Amino acid sequence: MSIRLEQTQKQIVSQKMIQSVSILQMSTQELADYIKEATLENPVLDFDERMPEDKDQERLRKLEWLASLDEQNRSYYQYDRDEAEEDKGMNNIAGRMDERLEDALRLQLLGGAYSEKEMEVFEYIIQCLDSRGYFTVPASEVAAVNGVSEEKAEECIAVMRGLEPAGVCAAGMQECLQKQLEKRGDCGSLEREIVAGYMEMLGKNQLQAIAKALKAPLTEVAQAAGRIRELNPRPAQGFDNGDLLRYVIPDITVVKFRDGFEILLNDYTCPTLHINKEYLGMLKSGCDQEVKEYLSAKVRQAEEIQECIARRSSTLLALARCIVDVQQDFFIRGEGFVKPFRLADAAKQIGCHESTISRALKDKHLQCCWGVYPLSYFFPKGVSQQGQGEEAVASLRIKQALAAIIEGENKQEPYSDSRLCELLNRQGMDISRRTVAKYREEMNIANCRGRKEFL
Image (tube, rainbow, N blue to C red):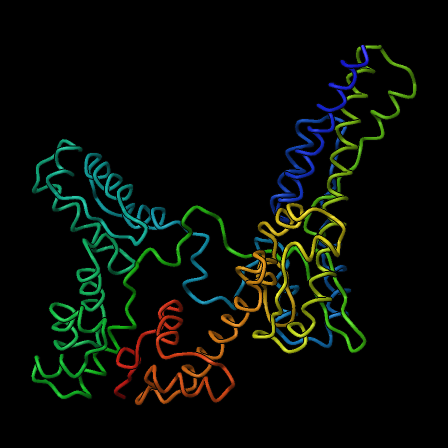
């Protein structure tokens, strides 16, 4: 009898642990979705979503706290409003993020006098577009799949390639750019010649070689190259890809004041979870035994969820305080001042297991006056391994210094790797030319020839 009771207790603890771990790993948005799902599965659970007026009041209160910060932090809270409100400050591409490319194409086809079969072919083409917005299926395959002639398939493909955005449904980048050049009035034959036969050289910034091959002045080739680079080689860019990842919602905000830091848990975006009082009243008033057992079980489940959410909040706050204590130089001075910090060190300070810290970091973001960062940013890659912290942070600082030097260089006379090495050495960074080249490539920065501008 006692053995059976012990086994049952272990099973209950295990289920609670699994639930607690699962909730800890959730981002703010995932937690909000989980709370809504939980109320559907458990009748004794209710949630209250704050009304827009409540959010406005909270946002105003937090804006008062943020009075000493720069515009970047204020803009986050000013953006928090109803999703239906139009953001007039977004550019054209970002403004299309709530529109799917396939829907935009279908809308353009509605006004045409197309047969039912042609519309079927159009839909097939739309469904075959890749992530760039290209269509690479041969006309013969389109014809075979849709039961039309190859000539009709080619006609349908041509119609699709005439739609907006320019370059959509192209067979590749070259055709995509050619379509865009056709629709632009300020591009001449030089741009078309470069796109037609010199894209590889353009990608390597070999403008002098292109000018020589085309027997054209270097200045004109440079101007043409600049106009080509203004084109969009990915016509699907800027449309909603279906992932619904529009904005990162920070889980934590760190506000710097003269006398310290204020840490805010951004749980105001989550519904408030509570137990329905009517069901609690039924339990107290004495109801049918079967109903009582059912409601009691559901109340216990609800209380466990509330405990897990509260534990998640306390863990995140403790972790945020720990990060702020260790990384104060970063929060005061900015990027480039992240110190070595291991998960094991954070776990020891908070008083929990390292795996708990790892789970708490998952999909969590922190906002401060320098921007929005994943929590893992404050634990540089490699710091969980003994003795690797200093090396990882040194690498991060060198890359940041390298990027800053390249950003400020004369674009018509960019620095060679040897010169970059010398400049970094002057800043007290002991690094070789080979390592400079390695870091530059890791950051997807071209060599001096690739960075050279001719105008």
